[in-house]
Image (cartoon, rainbow, N blue to C red):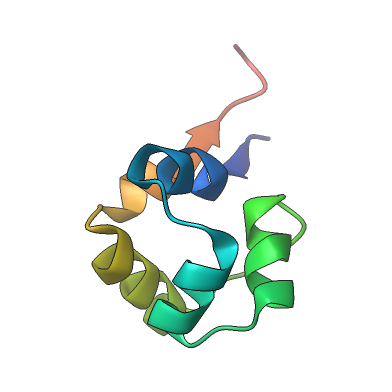
Length: 71
């Protein structure tokens, strides 16, 4: 079975946006964004994903990556 990898840290670095800036733009706490950034979550609301994509001017596929165990 594969898994989903969060690439939020990479997109934030590309956009030169800090955790505090993104937190203010999206309306999600620093703690929750930090968990997302470090891949320590098991679910994400579509509304949160939409807000992050809008703030970072990106697509969900820029943040989420699927990898299979067969690689």
